[in-house]
Image (cartoon, rainbow, N blue to C red; front, side, top):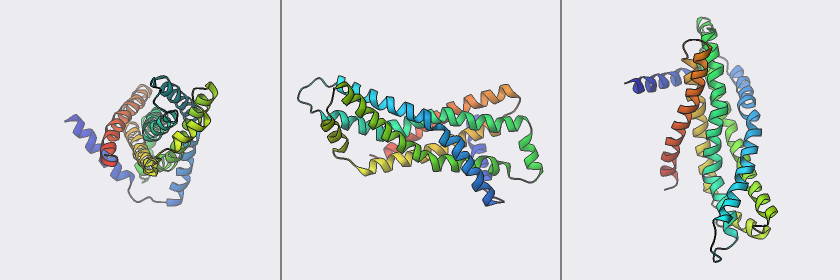
Length: 246
């Protein structure tokens, strides 16, 4: 019953969040601020993870190919497919759930325990919409760019690792990343990214918005935001894969 209670309260919070905003211009300004805080400032960690993960995928793929009958372009093909279909949209989203999700939960949770949210409600401001909606829009608008950036860096990192160590030639790698390329796979990845961004923002905001207690509880809410966001992302990832690819 407790699970149903939280699910119901989550959707009630979404209803309040998407209520008609009082001043749309103010919301747009706050959305730009959130895009910078939650998106632009995540570029570094996304770049680092993507580059080295692409390099690792390339090296491991080549290491596990023992048969001389398998052509060299398979390495580039495997790196591209792994990156576009799963690594960039899903793994990077799980990482962002840790960085962005904890940030959202901590910020809103701190405002709750300091009674700043109560003050907004008393002044007649829709606190849910004012605090949460710009974060949702900011992550949903900017995360696709992060994921495309991740795709490029991962494939590029695989190229540098493969060619730099001599395990694959430039011609074979480039042939592999072009072999049977399906643009729908990129569309599929971006659809997942937008859905995951919505999950990260809303689940984390829910944990922060209903924080009760003090600073200790804010920390607990941040941890729960990361855990629950990751769990929901994994479940939804399976559902979207079944729905969009099979």
